[in-house]
Length: 358
Image 1 (cartoon, rainbow, N blue to C red):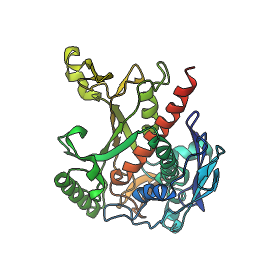
Image 2: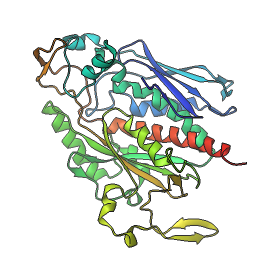
Image 3: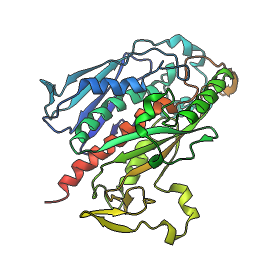
């Protein structure tokens, strides 16, 4: 199922949406790292359900337990196992789809591939799986603090409402000031209103999360198949509901000529910098020391609170009723997931870079 991600800093996640628990095994975390459990919990709190009127009302504390790999508060270099137990499953909410395929869900493809599926909330294909990623990403962030590498993600678009500023024009420290996680308060209110109205209409809506990584040294990434931006793209596209990824100038870059798009180098106190950053901090698949920035597009949540026509396992036409507790828009809770996956990639490639040189 591809439950493992990473090379040297490697994670393996397990668990289902309505199972007893979810968790992650982190292999390759350097020994001697002071594990800040309060920080890990704060990251999980940013992702957990039931935060506000614009998120699912499932109530999960998402409290975690470290069961291995940490002694006297520090990593030992052995695998770190973290478990998060489910507490608010309502599996009966899904009994009506036990033999039905929900439109745009993984029900049909799971059944076709494996011949069996956990229909309760989507089982392994549920976005609840990402709680394990956020826990692992928090450990990666703790490791990367020592290298002065920081991560910021924020909601930059909901439906047709889009911020007209890039990240350099925003105060990213204000991202957590509202329930949407958009650092522009005025636009955040408009986006919240749109999501809330969509929820009242028993529908869903998509959006974009912008990610920014600062402090990455030059030289991370491999120049051919394992380019840094390719790995970040893989990480983002592995997140539930993601439909698109772009970095640097992305698709907008095609509107520029080469003379406009090229990032000119210059020296600033013996540090190599570029006057523009259309490259998004990556050139030739390798980081160049500038900020890495990217956009991640999330589709409207597939579960809507209105009836839809579909088929069952026998191929018969059926009606899928709109039931359960779901987000009308995933982007507010996706912000910490985007940061976590980015941190896992950078932690991995930082360790790889050490092995590539004498």
